[in-house]
Image (cartoon, rainbow, N blue to C red; front, side, top):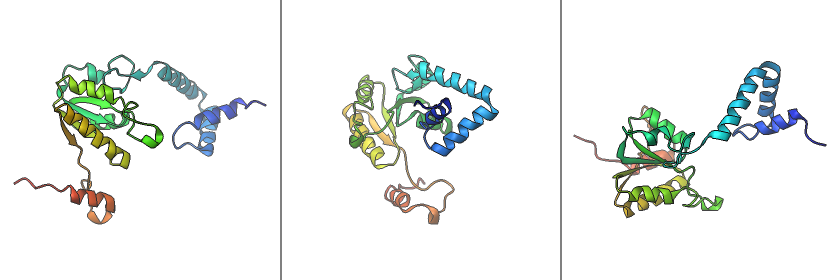
Length: 199
């Protein structure tokens, strides 16, 4: 016997991260009981997004056009390229910093056990971009996880092969944080990465 439409809806909602059986049921019931118009808008937006959003040919970020708005911009600094793991990481850097260079979105991180190697991250495209000669600094903004650190080391080697200076985002004690509340791993990393204070 095939699943009912309600069961299919609940199962479809479970593909979202962090959504289990109970959450999916609540969402499905909410749409059906209280907001069918919202459900139609959601279905249309989701259908259009899945159909029309692809990847930028230059940076691999999500884009509806061949080049995303950042890559198409003439006002960005071509000497700076920032490598990030995900489109969400790119967005947060864009919103929280004054960075005006370009990006390269890896869409993941090196993880041989999961079958994610240099090819899956588009590192051939990154190497070609570095070989063009415009980029002078590769800002490596991968997450401070084991896989993120391995990816950072790989990217740094790639940058040096193309005579590009690799830099790494600082990791450590958060601004406004108190040492007694910082986890041991973060504090150890921050202590080991200490730098001289400017005069």
